[in-house]
Image (cartoon, rainbow, N blue to C red; front, side):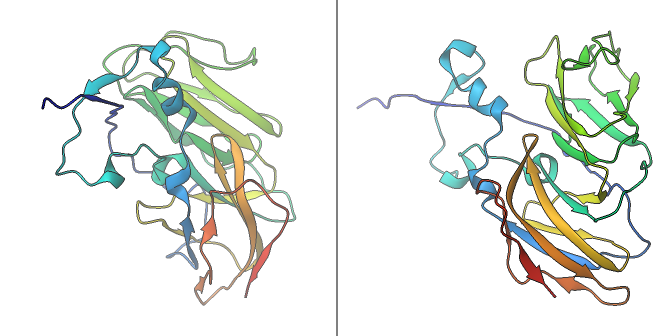
Length: 245
């Protein structure tokens, strides 16, 4: 009997390396892991899978490929931002490069303090026309290969970046005056932060929204603090906090 083809959505993206926004010298002094990332699906994936979008292809899944690798889900190293916040106000951070390539902007969600410059660089061999939705200060303009466009948000809020030419380009910038540093987990879910001694609240952001429950952590100057429990990112935002001493 002839096998019937099963519709699957395939996407190939280049490896992206992102350096922590700010932090103290030396290795991470706060370490942890996330859980539930396999249940996070970026909106662009869900939209591309719709028949009316005409952005998927028919493929015969290979039986030699494990089921877990045939299921679309978020890539924590670019889609899930862990932000460390304090009760005070942080100043602008150093310029952060945002990579435009492969029909995406990496990272797809980032948390920064007001006034932090973001440098969008086009690594594709064709032009892009990115813009901030509803923002007159960053309208669509031709961005040629290797060209850089800079933008910064002056105040707190949630900003969405899109591209007039490519609907798969969608990045969210969360501007929070209390954010001190951000990190992106590896594929194994592990992440690390290099923080000055003090109390912080760790928050996870995906698709421009906070996910999971915040965790309070006390960073030590000369010791490494490891979270006792994984930071769950699959649940809706909650008010309950877990203390890690």
